Image 1 (tube, rainbow, N blue to C red):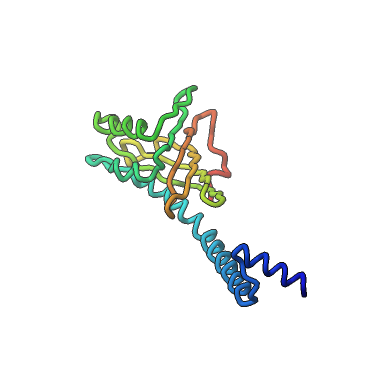
Image 2 (cartoon, rainbow, N blue to C red):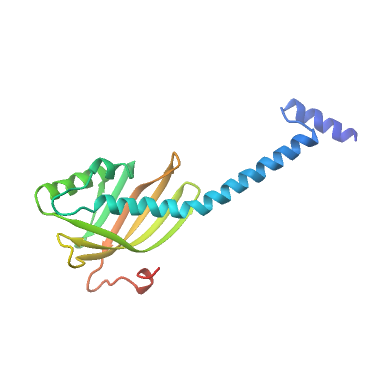
Length: 186
């Protein structure tokens, strides 16, 4: 009993209480925190998936229109990077440079229409970071046939309750580099 009284005095001096009711409230709040965390865990994969799908929609546009680059930019963090294979080279750019190049291709008529869609995905996350692997197909300048397929690896960060793309790197399918079957079916 004496040890408990000393312990309570030490706790009181540190700003803590020894009241049993306060302990129950602390346990209850921990329970509430765990419940909120569990709910967030259930919501996060969908929110991550939605962020990626929004970027696909934002990049896509029909002939005679063009992407809303301001909206498209809002899907990325301020320091986002974009990387992709072109031939044997790896191209890596800050997202603003990539979007500027994309916009120039649209304005010059090189890219008149684009429809990208996800055909497979796999999401993993921890806390405020996520990895989303996405198999895509793209129709470029024509709605008739698929011009390109590939896999994009997205890294996302959660900021102010919103998932933003921090980096994306992709490679396109080639004759000697087919997409594995496991990345074509959900």
